[in-house]
Every structure is written in structure tokens, then in C-alpha cells.
Image (tube, rainbow, N blue to C red; front, side, top):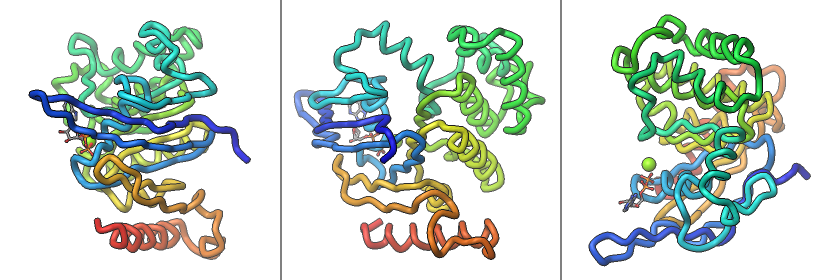
Length: 264
Ligand SMILES: Nc1ncnc2c1ncn2[C@@H]1O[C@H](COP(=O)(O)OP(=O)(O)O)[C@@H](O)[C@H]1O
Ligand SMILES: [Mg+2]
């Protein structure tokens, strides 16, 4: 049995707006093991982003517990949470903008320099490698206003991976991308996952979700179903003679069928 990496126990989140309370997450119980790649799907407004924010300690919860890497987040102060996020978590969130005064390259380098897990030379090298693989090396010296939405999204992923996080949280990481760029970003996430990074990702794309090990269906702040796909190539119908494209098609069909059952 793999080691548990992230666990939510009866996690609740209520927003109070104009005196009315909105129970956005209702007793979420979720266990994610080290090395897993988990997708969250569900209708708009079902609480997917809220789940990512609260389970990562970016936002506080109303009730329940989150245990990350053996530590109860509720026992940590803001400074400890910030340190833990810097060293062990990576974020690709649409609402989280990069620093306006820094170039794309400097934005990617910054958390690497702050964490001090490696020398500056090593961080530089890693940033360059990530940017090359993500096809954004030519944007290195540009300001964040001088690149496309898709390039910015890829830069966010490079920044999120700079410290080789234990867990990567990604909220629709391919949302602003065309299908070719989506597959490049996804490929980079799969690679990070193969190298040991656990991933929790929100996506609307069946094709993107098809590369994950497990999909959780969220509706009205409640986990309504789960589809276990396993690692790519691990199941009986995904063996050797089939090409990678065929295997992905099989997985995508499974996802589509399951989503229909869930009322997608
Ligand atoms: N900061 C906030 N304040 C008040 N209500 C919020 C806030 N963030 C989200 N909500 C509400 O929580 C619900 C779920 O939102 P969200 O988690 O963004 O859903 P999803 O990501 O699945 O589309 C929505 O009804 C939304 O209006
Ligand atoms: Mg959302």
C-alpha cells in the first residue's frame, strides 16, 4: 500500500455572502497517495477550485481536517504554511498572477531562489530546461504582459515545478490552451508525476483527465463518484501491442462513458 500524501477528513467550506451561507464543500473525504495523479471534474460552481484552495492550505476551511505529508494543516501558522507551500507544493492557479515587474524567467526563478534547496546555478539550469521543454524559452526576457495566455500558463507550470514539489495543485492548467499546447503541458505534468510529484488537477477535458490515475466527480460540494483508471499501461486492456495513442483513446472512451453515467 502506497504512503498517504494528502488527506481531507470531513472537509467543509462555507462562504457567507450578504448574510446567506453557501455550503460550498460538504464533508469531503479524500485520500491521495504518494505518486498518484488525480483529476477533479464536475459542473461549474460545484466547488472544484474551492477544494483545491482549502486542501492546499491556501484558504482556511470551515470544519474538518487536512493532513499533508503527515502534518495537520490546522496546527500551522501562516508563516509555516507559506514555507511548506514554497518547499513542498506547486500551484498552477488561473487567478494567481505572476509578478508584474519581473521577466518570465525571473518569475520562474524566484521560488527556486527563495527555497534555497539548490544553488542558483542549479536553479538557473532547471528553469532553462523546463522552459525549453514547455516551448517558452524565447519568452525568458519578456514581461508577463508581452506573452500570450497560453505562454503565461506554461510559465506558471514551469514556476510550479521549479522546486520539484511533493504535490502539484493545478486548476484547469490547460484551460487557455489549444489542443497541441494542452498536450505539451499535460506531457510535462505526466513527466513530473513519473519523477514522483503527486498531482491534484481540476480539468474539464476528458482527454486531459484520461492521462490521470483516478478521477473524482464533484457535484454540489460533494464527491459523487470516482473512476479508477490506474497508471497508463498498467491495466490488462492497455498492453504492449497497442500504441500510446490507442491506449489514450481507450481511456478517453472510459472517461466519457463514466461522465455520462455521472450526468455530465
Ligand atoms: N471567495 C468566495 N466568496 C464567496 N463565494 C465563493 C467564493 N469562491 C467561490 N464561491 C462560491 O462557491 C461555489 C463554488 O465555486 P468554485 O469552487 O469556484 O467552483 P468551480 O471551481 O467548481 O467552478 C460557487 O457558488 C461560488 O459562487
Ligand atoms: Mg473553478
